[in-house]
Length: 327
Image (tube, rainbow, N blue to C red; front, side, top):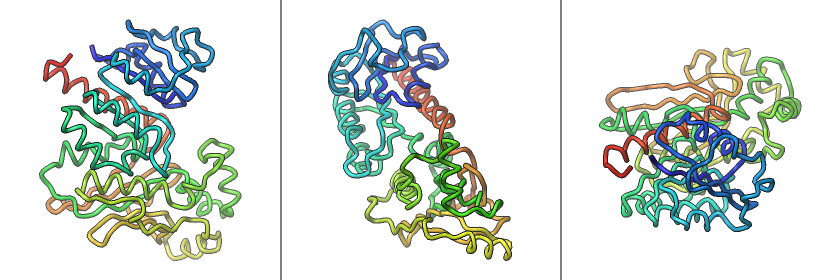
């Protein structure tokens, strides 16, 4: 049975820990959990009743950094779920490096390290014979990365175009259907827990750009950084502009595009009958393949669906290691 540690004990970490501890994820045992407060570990594995709501309330808590837990070498798999840091990817980047250097497999939903150091980390994983899976960094539970890398690996991906941020899509949808101002739609999204207290990365298009970099590098063999993306957010979009688009059978969406001309994020006019014209918190991505042509995939881009992506990546690690007799 694969031994797992989770670093990052927020919504995703707690939900995943409960699923693993309850036996809902086959072939894996949870032996450690870390947050910014410290870490707990149990070599024979956590049961559901062992899991605290807050690590600070656990009698097992050790006041030490997550790197100490990783360095104990009690696990085969690190699930890295610390918050995204777009400046330097820390502390997640160091956590992933340390795990890979020890030959541990890594599954992550942390966009920072993957967007900032994809080539380095994938090279390190290959050197150490480890797996680094990051489906959960983009599109929530939509299998964008595995669709290309496992199902369409022989076909060349020429371009990517889509809606990659559920928060801005919700705001623009409310502006389109209800005539709301951006500020009012944002406040509603925050009340519903759709938007963060500080929505800057979403509104300014940075979150979409991070996801676009990850997709371009992992699916199109590019070597792009966030600084390579031309970014324009939605803060300048008015209800009047949305209404004018609506009269022409169109609407405005925040669109990310990756193709031979580069990477760019900006509000775009989209026809209401376009396959990527989805509403609410949905994401939609259109791939253009050399042989297959256009393929559009739609789904929820955050929350519980991201847990699904993590579980699928964990399952892939377990399946691969069982085949190689490593567990």
